[in-house]
Length: 444
Image (cartoon, rainbow, N blue to C red; front, side):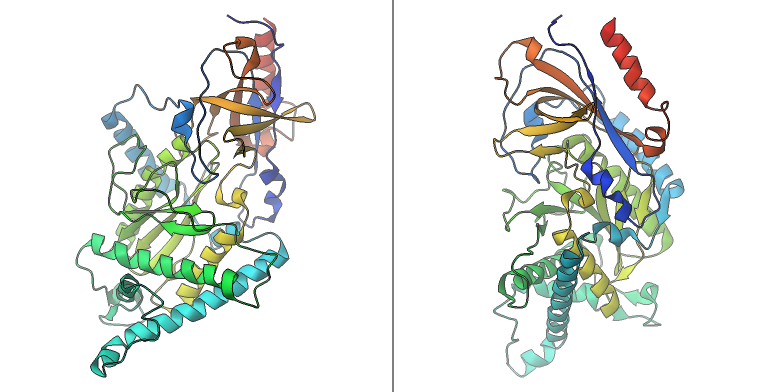
């Protein structure tokens, strides 16, 4: 047992929470708190980017002693309960990603308008492709978009089967669910391409306001992702990139995944519920593998209906339908994707107080009294492994200026957990009791 430092409790409040008032969802705001003590353990370095969270290089021990069958059974039961009892339909879900600065929000709207116009032009061009081929003329978009983009027409222009105004009466051209994936990917990639083009080539776009990221689609579908705890396939997955950089390898990796996408051929209620359950069950590993993830995003695609989901600490929120077989539905989806490219990292579920620094190491910020102190994360002792709850993580850390060696007195344990704000701010009791308990243990 090592001695040396006085063991002190740390509390930290995420800057993201100070800006949470702008959210229109009626949900409980939370604050974080951390505690530290001395322990042993070896540190390891790793290389990554803010969206490539290589936490396994920090020696993460996740669900080490639990069987696949046990995890599968537990997560399946919890996902089914959440989908039935703790899922709320809320029209304001897209507002979570709306850029907070009015100037940035205005640029996002302009980018979405541009991308929508280009998307509608392309759809019209592909819809008329048969007559174009008959006249042996090429489309004006042939040289601009890869041929694979043409598959989106099967998704946005389904064949009528009865009342054309009812999505449930429209017949998709797909016979099997996996046939949907290339069409969904083509739609998302074309939208991303046009959003990038707006910021790079449009003379009307403000040069001082640029998108923060791009939305990329993993190339492989219906596969077991890398860094997973259970042997379960996901339909599709999205990741975020800076400056168009792409992840090496086409297979989804839970350390990179921004959102899981679950697709169904039909939009009937039972299929939508099934998509929700799968989305929830497959999102566990996002929290497990991404040490700076507070909440997760996901998408369901049932027939032509897109829904965006936010998996918060205590509830899953689902947006209204975005029917991509209609111009209005496509416009809503494009605006959401534009907002995601321009908004802050914290609006997408990334904790700004845990970040990957220029020196190729993870940092965590904590408060000691009113002073902010930054520690280098040397090892993840415990990672989050649930959808709901406090998402407790424990890190073995050292101070920024300390050299990494075997001197145990230089290391601390930082405990990071999220809790309801009304239990930490409005009284001296609540979760502060745990801090007081830890202080008494440290004095013993």
